[in-house]
Image 1 (spheres, rainbow, N blue to C red):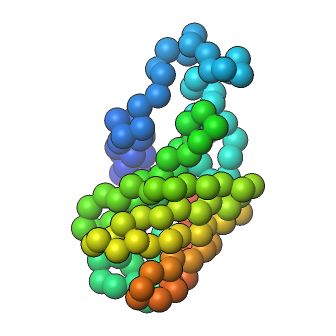
Image 2: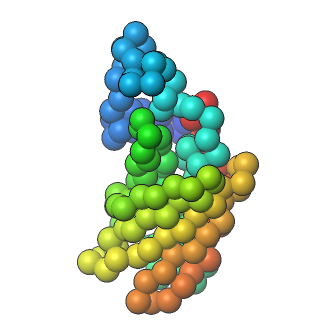
Amino acid sequence: MKSISAFVLVTLFLVIFPTKANASETCDNGMDAIDTVFAKDDLVGGWAYTVQGAPAGYEKGFLLIVKEGKGYKAQIQVGGGTLMAENISVKKNTMTFDVMVEGQKVAVVLTANGSKLTGTSTSAEGVFQISGEKTLSAG
């Protein structure tokens, strides 16, 4: 069952974040396009997370982070649907971004340390602690 889930996630990954599939194509830095997406990076991958004290439906979810060229994209899957991260900034193993939840901006700060993820989400509802584990590695 786990391999089926991984297959589904990888398929979603490729559909949601299309990349150059032809490995002979290169990026500006001379690296293969595929290698750029799957470069070693603690943040990149799939994360199962929990948010302590979050409103019902938002307390657990799945976060998918990909690196595309020099930038990042992130998608959050929660019970109510899919949310896209905006204004993403990354410094070392810390990512900050905003996400719109029911018309309200939520600021998120996450730090990856190996297979563990910690951070906070801040909104008008307050500050909530986030913890997660990597469940899908990109490379």
